[in-house]
Image (cartoon, rainbow, N blue to C red):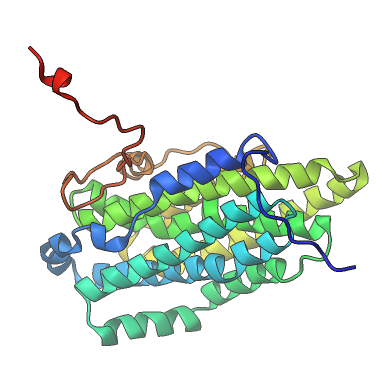
Length: 320
């Protein structure tokens, strides 16, 4: 029997949260050209060759993850969600992943030559940890054949959105917190704000799928989630050491990574796995995405809000 496509009717909500998430996504929409990246050129030149190399590789790795989410993660999960309203939210979030990926190219175009950025993208293809990460995540996205597989694809997505991105976010947050590369750091803030919403929404969908499964199936999935967590963490730990050891930040980043894996588990309604640890306060403060750029005529910071409920002025408003 052919599936009947029905027009989405937002006046009859499928649930009590999807419209709120969609509205939040609308309010957060931004484009990379709204951030004055040229302001970072002097700070970029003041970095050492090693620091610039690591920064470029960080952005390359983040581009890889956003490409995976926009090209496979959101579209494939969306295909297996019945609600047209949920599909709309996932589709919008997939679009934003492509904006994130494009924003990194804008940073490259501002600060480096085309040849340099080409070498970074070649590095992302050759790096064994990035390759392995992509294979693991993509494997879950491409294996959705049942509610159980859909749940695990959602878990993989939340681990990516809420944890794996953050080993890459660490260095831009650290530099921006020290007053360096602040415009690029603002883009990272904007992306983190989006990823926070993505992780929360897909985590909510995952909890719904999980709640509908039999108890014995849930127990099997609990074990699989624990296994996936170990696989992704071990691989990300290798990536972190490989990336950050030249500047001695690997242990700090690993603590931050464990902190964010705990946040991902909370998005899934699961207990945390790693013990509490002290996180660099500069980076921890960077997660609090408040506006750092103010130019209400041409630029957008991460606290930008669209005007709503506009009321026209009248002569009475100016009466003394």
